[in-house]
Image (tube, rainbow, N blue to C red; front, top):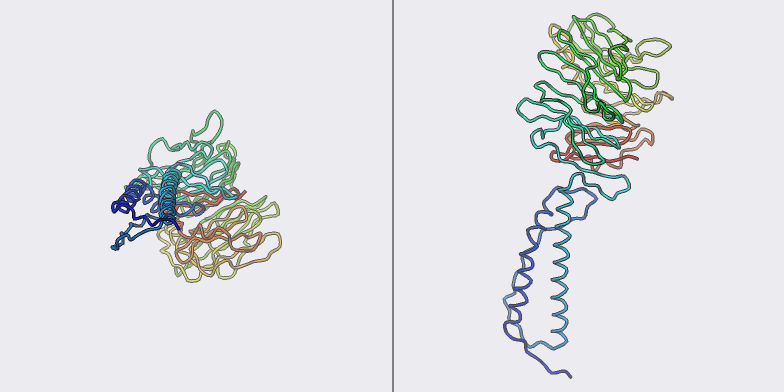
Length: 424
């Protein structure tokens, strides 16, 4: 039998004082990390729990129990030190821009500009992140971020007083529009080469209304309306002044062309008009080498067509829309933005259609790389058209305020961070 030893009365006090001191040292870092916005793939760090002291006194303790207690104390202190180091590292990782997870498809987050913090549009590729944002006081800016080194480029030479809308970002170009009460412009800037970041104007107008724009890495489509006459032009981005060609006009005076897009050798758009009662209608048209004509009929409820990777989507309006025809193209365009209803997807090669959701807003729909994104019930959702199933990343998109897609990546803004999910 080992002798029974009674530890000094101050032993317990010193032990708990040491633990409390260690918690106080590492507590703030762990608390900040536990409350910070993190990536879903990162481990959860919980805030430290205050240590309460038991009211009872220490009685006689066997030597073996004292040794075990000493080992436990050392282990606790060591674990707290390691936890503090991990929490500090996690906090540093959260603040580092960009931060990349170790998931199979890389998940990266970026902070928007401190002044232009309200993101309105976002898209990303393997190489670039582009976003349009406002400062809340009437000024907009467009940024492109290099995903290789994190360098941020302000594309506009000065903040725009009109609305900046991001049209596309690709391997070599970023394309956007600026619309205000004094006119509009569709512009592009190269992302590489000697002239990188130098904006060039593709089209502009003062007396006309811009009703739609689309672009990829080589071409752009621009739809306008002048004095009730609608036209759709197709142009090369690198030489727009000499390449612009009118490929379609409105079906009749007063109709406008919206939502143009290109798929292979076919161009698609919505031809929108108001009847004599002021009810708004929209039909999808296409222009191919074989000719031009409508591809949807019915009652004219097919709004906001988008094409990509062999698919065509549109919103089949579930309720009637009305417009004051005297308001001209701008009023018709604004009324189109109110269209909500079923989101339909058509496989162009097979003619098979599928309903993706029973109700969504036409302005929330994005299509790229065979993926469809939309908003329903206050949450962003996605669908893989090729696999015919919901996106596995939908849990990540649940709190997205703004979404965008390219064939390379999903991108969204969650209210504080810009997030990019690489698809390949």
